Structure formats: C-alpha cells, structure tokens
Image (cartoon, one colour):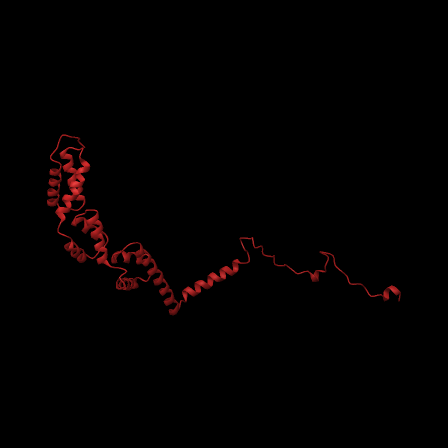
Length: 232
C-alpha cells in the first residue's frame, strides 16, 4: 500500500450550501419577525383561545356566575356613588343610573335601599335644596318649586310636605321680585311694563292673584310716571 493510502484522511468541511441532502432540514419554519403585524403563527392559537372562551361562557358554573354578578353590582355601585358625589339624586334618578349599568335588574332596589340607609340618597335633603335654590335664590313661587321637584322625580307626598313647610310670604316675595324687575324696565311705557311683569312672575310659578298684587305694587313704586314712553 502506498504511503499516501496509509495516511488518515483529514476531516471534510463542507462549504455553505454543499452539505449532503441528508443533513439539510426539510421545510424549516421561518423565523418570526417581531415587527410582522400579521403574526401568521399566532393566528391558530388565537382561534383556539376564542373557542375556549366560548365554551367557558356556555358552561358557566353557578360559582362563576355569582362572581360575575357580584362584580357587576360593585361596578354599578361605583358608578352611582360617582354621580352622587357630583350632585344629590332622587330615588328615581338613582334607578335610572343603575339601569344603565350591567347590574342585575332584581338587585337595583337592594342598592337603592342600601344607599338610602347610608344617607347617600336623601330625597328630603334634595327637596330642601330645591326650595332653597329655586324659591329663596331664584324667586320661584310654589308652582315653580313644585314643578322642579316633579321633574327630579321626588315622591309626590314628600313634595306636598315640603310645599306646606315653605314660608307663607309668597306675596311679599313676589312683590320684592316685581319691584326689582320694574327698575330694569323703566324706559318702557306702563302697558308694556305691566305685560312683561305679569309674564315674568307667571313663569316663576306665582298664581294669578299674587301676580296681580305684585304687579300693582311694582307699578305704584314707579310713581305712575308715563313721561318716558317706548313701545315694545
């Protein structure tokens, strides 16, 4: 045997792309590009998750249903509490707020009762606020105050109770408002002032008899002057 044949063969290093076919992996999976928004290999998994979610919803256990219901109620109470922090609400208004949430309709009255016990909802306090803001500050008469209470959904019996508690000075209040208003109409003729005062007081909820008294008092306070006439 020639000397060359006795020598041990050196290891063979294959050039790129020249490896035997048996060493080349078949159909390699492409590397995922994090910047690829389509994520082709994530889609099957997403479908599988969606399928599982559907199965879980369809097979909801009593325990999981109770947990979900409790969470819905907690969120509804949080929404109502947030509204109450902004302003007082009547029971009717509170029911409307809860009806707009995911709470079980059968639990709405329970929440209303609980919030009432905690004094978060207090229709009596709300009615007093309306009397103060609309009668004492804005000068509305009984009818105007009553209309606002009804609009807010306050209990009818409570409305009557609060109206009875209003001070019996409605005529004096109407006269005070009319005299203040007439000073702003001084450039108009008496007939126009009379008409505008009547409309002004009627809009505030004073009855016709009180309006007549208040308008007469306001006109008398002008001294009956008709020297400055301006028709409007």
